[in-house]
Amino acid sequence: MAHELDHLGNINMKLLQTFLAVAERGSFRLAASAVHRSHSAVSAQIQQLEEQLGVRLFERTTRSVALTDEGRLLRDSAWRALYELDLGLRQIKETSDLKRGQLSLASSPNLASVYLPRVLAEFTKAYPQISVDVHELTSAELFEAARSRKVDFAIGPQAEDSSFRFQTILIEPLQALVPWTYYPKLTSRISLADLARLPLLLSSSATAVRALIDAKMAEAGLVPTVRFQFVQAQTIIAMAEAGVGAAILPASSLTRATAPSARILEIVKPAFQRKMALITLPNQTLSPAAARLAEKIIQDVRAATQYRET
Image: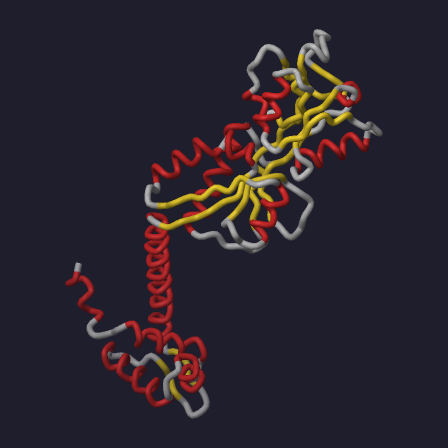
């Protein structure tokens, strides 16, 4: 390969950079200021480059500097070469960054337990030298962690908040887990009004799910009987299966409900759903490793839930 580049001779990067500075500005003086060299040094470098190539690159007058035909050809070729070189160097750095490092994300406990295990297993297998910290947080804590950049990104409830950028990854209904003793009807549905009459087991008031439930109850003019509230979905499910009360949870959480003592019912009149999203700050640029993990989370969760962007 070396013999194929012999025509480059002693031309180096500094000579080409100085040449491009003059070509872009049409002035030795302005180019000298841009590259932080003296006017005489820039003039000497251009002269050196012309001597090495055996052609004149600029037509000089007392008032202006213009490219010759050979100068225009070198300008265009040099820009293409420098662009390709810069692209290659960036790709090398990104590949290096993907091989090692540490990143962190905040997640709602439900998303972390239902969807992240497989995603992280495949990601860490592909990039074994990257350490991933997952922080399971309530909605308020999650947004604060993303806002203060304590984490690279978050996955949690999608909200009407312009201070964040949301990429929807799933839309799912909220459902009820109701003990047979409280609602013995042979049906697969329950109205929100009937549900409000039962002793309820709900998520903590610090969660987005609870805020959504409270809003729907208020819109319907209902005052529910809240028997207990918990942070963890698995605890709520266990309580409902033990007959303590009826639970309202996202459909993905209720995939773990297996006891025959309680059944999953579709909530109607009205039905309601939640959106979950990958959360970043506007114009935030993720590191190569964080961007790759975020992309995998979006793709894998959407594929698992058959979500498609509209």
